[in-house]
Image (cartoon, rainbow, N blue to C red):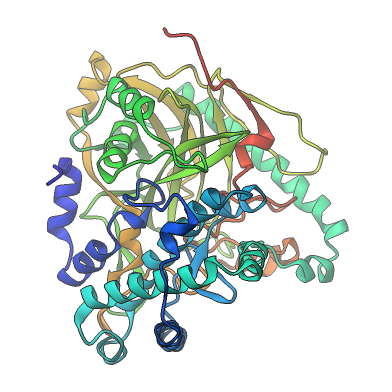
Amino acid sequence: MCQMPLPFKRWRKSMSLRVRAACLLCGGALMLGGCAGVPSTIAQITAPVATDEVSQCQRWFSDLDSAVLNAGVRDATAAVVDGFPYLRVNRFLSSFRGQLSSDEAFAVWLEHLRSLDASARRVEIANLPTVDRMRLADGGLLAAGQRVDRCGKALMANDAVQIEQRARLTAHAVVADDYVAWWRVAGAYAVTQIAFHLGIRQLEADTLAAFAASRRDESVSPASIVRYQPVPEDAGTGHSVRAILSALPHDTLGVPQLTEAHRQTLLAAHAPVIEVVTTGEHDRIGYPVWQPSLLPGVDSARPTVFARQEFTRYGDAVLVQLVYTAWFSERPASHAGDVLAGALDGIVLRVTLAADGEPLLYDSIHPCGCYHQFFPTPRATIRPAPNALEEWAFSPVQLQRIADGERIRIRVASRTHYLIGIGTESSHSDGARRKRDYAVGYTLVSDDELRSLPHPADGTRSLFGPNGVVAGSERPERALFWPTGIVSAGAMRQWGRHATAFVGRRHFDDADLIERRFDLRLAEPAR
């Protein structure tokens, strides 16, 4: 049995039995990559399937879809592929649609889509009301998960040999834009975008000033800063990360085949130190929970950072990305009529790694998709924006190369939770040792835990609604920003649903987000 790093052991012990069962069912499929037994040819997924089995599986998926939709527990991490109930797609996998000329590439891609659906199905079944769950999964969650796999493979084998189905599948395996086009038309976006552009430029100027003040330590008293760091702090090293990434096999699509143990090592090695300027309970990071009021809250007695591993593309290369999210209970109002205030808030930090394991750049948003900032290292150079209005790649700080033994450190403002500082520190420095004396340790857990949380009404529910938005986290600003085309601007969102630009179109998980905006040096001489 694989040994789990201490933070993940603590996570496993703290889970409810139902959440634990759901996660065990999801297995390694919760994050893309590293799946043992991924088929390499169409022949491996096209064993003869009886017509009655295909019909039974189609009916079962239809019944399951009806129950999920009626209960409002559809998972929004990946998009449903129209006409293919056993498949889901994200923006990364959708980007390969034009590169599936060989049977081998198509088979590997198809299995990735099926794995995404299987992961979502198990979460949805676990979140169903008890009556529906018992009706559809009378053999328990394990039996339901096995049926998802069995029926998914049967329908996949049936469709894979039909040329017209393959063509239809590649045409439909797309993720809808998270912008509502007709809202932009109705809101006279061609004109209103100028006002949004001016507001964004002012925010960027304010952000540069905040970063400068933070560097000079003029903005806050050190006594008001609470420092959160991963436990154990020394989990993983630059050497172990390089060893993992340099030895990884890749599938036919070029996707690195990470195991769950690999992911945990990488996530632990790059977990950030988070310094929060703290003036109240609203500035303490914690674990999102469903409250008796049926509204989401945050348990600050459980300092937690939620982590996930993703991929992005750069030319022919597929790069590993690590994503970390810390949650706060609210963004409190700073004045009467503050349109940005509301329940739940957070900060998201992502690092994109080169194949040699060295960070290329970091970027950050809030869970609403707002305030996207980029922090390139010397191995990443920003490309010019295509036009003066578009939100492109705002970068308040250029980072130095991240040395072995160094960990990224960010500073977060009180109340607004704006990112106002970023740098590195060595775990062996005297300053870091002194800071550890008063630090709060946080637990690093899988971001997928948020897809199935204990709910006071019945069983478990995702933190996120079927549209990917956290109900109860809506902001008054949505009444002002709807002409940008973003639904419920300012509300907290699920991974895969973050539109990050008011001017232009940009998603945090766009497969070409980094490629379009940066020139990267993927290979560097050994240091």
